[in-house]
Length: 301
Ligand code: PLP
Image 1 (cartoon, rainbow, N blue to C red):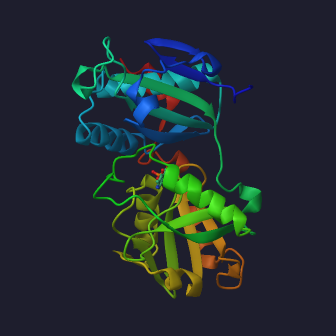
Image 2 (cartoon, rainbow, N blue to C red):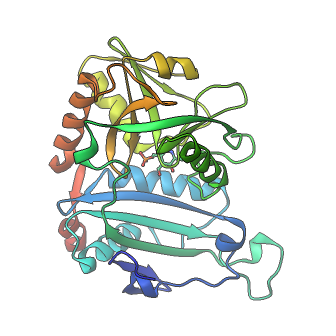
Image 3 (cartoon, protein in one colour):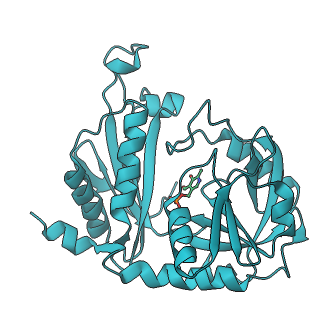
């Protein structure tokens, strides 16, 4: 089957992404026993690379995985994948799996942790030409895996709750989904955090979610623009009654949510505060405080 064109780093080698293969005995494949992070490159510059690497290292630490290379070497590997891929704008993933053990031992400590990275073309949850129409989302009755079981701050592949939620959303005529927690609070969707806008105040779920880098960016930019931001429990009906709502993800940035459970959010179009944040977000992409050039990383000794 064709794959998006790109370059992967696996087994200490750079190979075309379609040739990057792992063992079926890898715990990452057998048990979703892995962590990962996704950073993007826009016009040959990584956006918030250090923050993504920080989160990746912290995720690994929390689940007892050890990165086989140092931090700066990881940065170089990612940059090398992008450079060799030739992509101007790229979706760049770093994965650390538990790995396989020589004896198929059931003790995770016997497995050899494995680093895999790849760069493929940038992918959008919502393309720029779809922004005005926005995302149509269903809030599923399916519960997000509780944070007491799998810590969502460790970016992970335990996605069956999201995937079943997506089927639920498709059945209800929506294109994407947000899951709730056991108390009925909103959590997040497959690959994105969520914000509701009420007047000049933005609110986003605080618990049971991945601490998204785009979420953090939206919070920082909104505060700079003098909006109030609250990280707290957010109820389902706050989303349906909001003036505006948006999703945040590395895969697309800040994306208007215009329909919830088949009803319009606000006037059903991308809202003015969301639009201001989208503008501010993309403006930061060539700012040296927020981004670093692929060539710059490769030129560092
Ligand atoms: N929530 C989940 C479950 C995710 O998988 C992701 C990203 O893939 C996000 C939120 C958004 O995080 P970020 O803004 O760092 O891409």
